Each structure stands twice: as structure tokens, then as C-alpha cells.
Length: 268
Image (cartoon, rainbow, N blue to C red; front, side, top):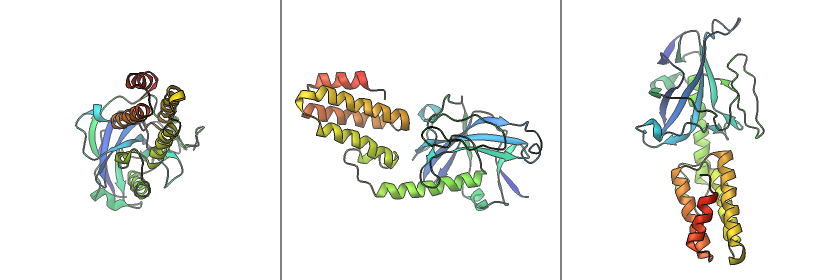
């Protein structure tokens, strides 16, 4: 068997990135298993448990602080609601490409690059099941997201990301946001639609009598969405802040009061 090494001397906490279709994807080794019992102790002597993160980047970040290392990439198109939390197994202490599997040609197209070593986030979003053994048992959480590790080779993981992004980008082209068009390249289409639904509800209920209550209700709804989906970063927070403020003020609420409600209620 030919095995081209993509990463060696691997340690828990190691961060790697790969460039796929002009986007940088990050992943982290969160655990290493080396003591499986028979019959797995030979071909599966070394197990690397890897989490792929949701946030991708057009330009390569310079520092760890610029990365979002808690929100796990959850598939929505290729596989139904599966956290990209995988285990990569080998008889040697490395992660590599093998010619026994499909997409072996990826070894010459996509390079796994070491970025840094940093502390593993606790907990991830969604929380994962830390069952670092074989055989793998597929387990879903209350939101029907598979949160257990999936044994997967590096080349099949890259294929899954490419296919998922292809379908995700196709969906992006089919939505026309009313408020947050600038999010299309960064935020999951379904998340944009859910956020805009909250904003639209506020717009429809923005009458002077119940404006305080309506504004607070909108911010609470966005808090719950972000708690569940984890899509509000710095850019999204600024856009939401400006949008909520503009709607409230245009409907007759004093700016100082609107700012007070938003600031005291928001979790993002």
C-alpha cells in the first residue's frame, strides 16, 4: 500500500488548514488514541480525532485569535446534519493519503498545512460525544445532528467538504436577502433566512405602543438562534445592531432607549 504522509509528529491541539476552492478550512486534532484492543490494535494502531470548523476564510488568518474554534462544521446537503468530527486511523503515526481509496489524486491538489497548536475548546457547538474507540457508534443529539465520530480518511473528508460546499454555494445563489446581502459568502443560507425572519417580524410589529416589547422580543429570538446555530460573528453582530436600531428609531422609539434595550438584551 502506498501512503503519502500529509501530517506527522501530530499532537493534541494541532491546528491544520487546507485551501479548497479559494477558501481556507481549519481543523483540529482533539484527541489521539494509541491503545485499542484486538482486533483493532494493528491496522488501527494510531487514531487521530479531528474536528472541522464551520468558519472559513477568504484570506489566511495570521493569528489564532482570528479563528473561530468552537463551532463545528455540520453538513446539510451531502449528509443529513452530521458534525464533521472524524477519526483517522493508521498503522503508522501519521495522517496520509492512500491509493487504496478514491480521490487519491487529492494528495497533489490539496495540502494539509500546520498552523499552530492551541487548547481544544470545551465544549464545542454542537457538543460532541467523546467516545474515542472502535467500533464507532453513530449517535444523534436532540436536534438530530450526528455528534459522534465518523471513521473517515483524509481524502474522503476533503471530498465531503468539496461536495458540501458545492451544494451550499448553489443554494446561496438562489436566495436574495432583504437585509443582509453581504452575509451570503460567509453565513449558511438557512441561517440568513432565519435571522431575516426575526427582522421581518419586528418590522411588521413596529408600532409605537408595543415597540419596547417587540424590539426586546426580536433580540431574544436572535440570541436563541445564535445559541443554537452559532453564526453571529463580529460582522453579523454589527449588521444586526444597526438594522434593529434603524427599525426601532424609524418606528418612533428614541435612539437612547433602543440602544439600551439592544445592549442589555443581546448575547452576541
